[in-house]
Figure 1: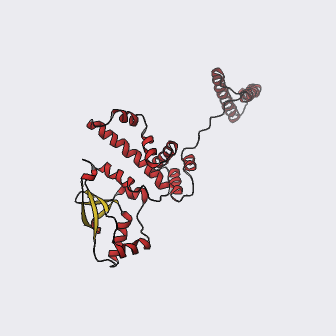
Figure 2: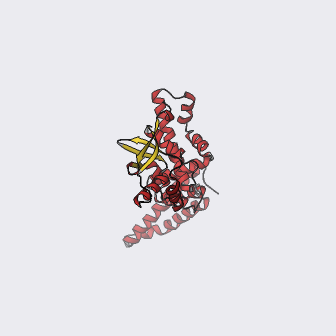
Figure 3: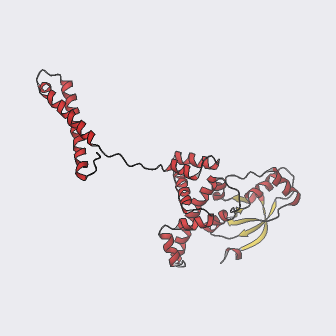
Length: 274
């Protein structure tokens, strides 16, 4: 059944409304300005909150800031009623998560919040597609798009961003969620609008430079080192030679031979630089 047909209008006590964890993860804890609180104190709510039935209570899907403003006004005794007008829905968890993001589409956001939106929306769309496939209700062509890694196309279309920007956002958030300190700091900079998505992505996934090829000069240097060692070898192998000097010379020879062997292998593959 369509979500709009699974709703009713009612009043819910503000102290029974729990915040959705996805909303807190993306947008943080609400902090209503005094202007909003004064407006609610004078005029009440112009639009009802959107809540979802969750266990024996309710989770806020849209209107966290207004709910927090109402709660503070009630605590401060600036309004008498704890009851707030709500649209009560009965949505599955993934549908509820998607509504959390869609209901904040017009919100002014930091670059970090936009990145979290893209990453979470990509996860939600992928999981919803998997559920539809299991139920046999998904469009086969759409399923192939998602299975072939085209979830980014859907997220880019919904968020109004380029595919490449969405890919970078997902990479940053994924690394941050995995505990990467560099990614977490980059995400914090995006939250403070101190950097761009591209710059943050470069910190998280620095461009790999092609390692320099072994050069002919390195090969010739190793040959000269071996020649010098060969000249001193007879004296080092004599019974009167110092054992430490003998061991050190043998180790130097081993390293030089190793370098030569590596260079020879590279030369055989045709990768030796001039």
